[in-house]
Length: 459
Ligand SMILES: *[C@@H]1O[C@H](CO)[C@@H](O)[C@H](O)[C@H]1NC(C)=O
Image (cartoon, rainbow, N blue to C red):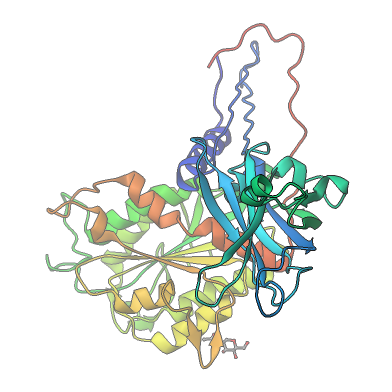
């Protein structure tokens, strides 16, 4: 009997979620129990179709191509086709045109292995050579075929190809070829994935901060913070749903939970950054349940109060993120808001500042308002900037919660869809930080070899 320890459970669930959310091609799970021990061991191996993430950088030149133009020589370019399973071909790359030469050297180009051969090293790749014409009626010079495996031998006698024009070959007895194309270089570039970091033991350091913006009086049923003894209010629902998704990614599930926009007891001082649990020295809450409890407790003790400033809260997390830049920790700030924002300019500047740091911001909008300002912060359409400075990377993901709940507003329609959208951009944001900082994943631990005395395997 295998007993899943908490951390293994989380690891499994993270892996399964990673597979669903981040469209990692496939995993192999192998689980082994060690009988006679109270706490079993589960070994999980995760594999991706590694080659599919790779790209290749290739460069070609040609020699003695046929002359096609009446005035001048030829203006050659190459068209690459990947063969499909049904034998048809799909164009996957076109080179630039090199003007007026029969011995062109094309610029090196990068193409993903997926685009080039769909990850199948032996699949036919057809390359056509054309002479460019201004009017678009490009003249066919000839063609040759190869495969990824052939190309991967790099520059050698195997990668000099005769360019053949089948029509000419049929007609002219003396026809040899229409020139040759030579591979000059072939370089594989491996793209590191989110999973590589997880495999290297990285995943345990996500940090999640919860901040609730203020709207309305909790005693009014119209308030998004309405304290209804029988059901969760809008904030509570969004907090629970999104919190349950993200808590699996946090190493210790201790969340510093901050609120902003309130008057605090005992003196009614306005705060834009207060601990939901009332303890500024230790604002950590245990799990999402702890955060929910602190949230409801704070609604009773503080008086929610505008304006709603985001910048202090972003800067608060940024201060932590700025202290660990070696890539050993990555911070995720979750902001739940009704969309009202009083300090747009400062918030943009804070985001531009934070784009240099190991952090991401997830903004969840609750309630019926227009979320134009939040869409703008998301920056998916226009990269966010402040006073002429652009964000180094995209670090904000905005999700309008109403898109995921039913008409009564009481039930989340699809947790899976919500999870996918909440976390959609995190892996890429995380990777972009690691890439810019040149932080490589730690090598995965060596594969597990089961001890010889294993008697049975059971899950
Ligand atoms: C952003 O960074 C600059 C330079 O470090 C700093 O002067 C400014 O106060 C920061 N802006 C905000 C809103 O924190």
